[in-house]
Image (cartoon, rainbow, N blue to C red):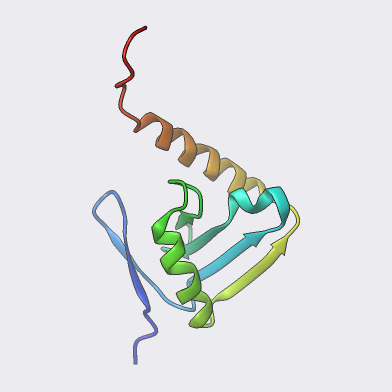
Amino acid sequence: MSEKFANINISNGESVDATRFNTSVYNHYGQGELYDHVWVQKDETTGIYIWKQIPPENPAYAALAPIAVEHGCETHINIQTVAEADLRAFGKAAIGDIESIPDWLPEV
């Protein structure tokens, strides 16, 4: 029986299966909630962040997080401090999200 409960498509065309063995949910306390995410380990050195707020109110996070908890994935709740690696990854993702906004504002 497969432990897979989701398949994540990556922007480079690859995909990774989410299982209870390679997926974790991270929920932070207070202002740290900005960094809430699901982490899916791709291989020994890389993984995929599914951020709650990139894009804002990310529907992928909203769908995946409860399913991951339901399938017994490792869940971290009310984390007080955001990990440095998460801060760096969030910053890179946020910059990428900003760069994807079309330059459509009219000149004044």
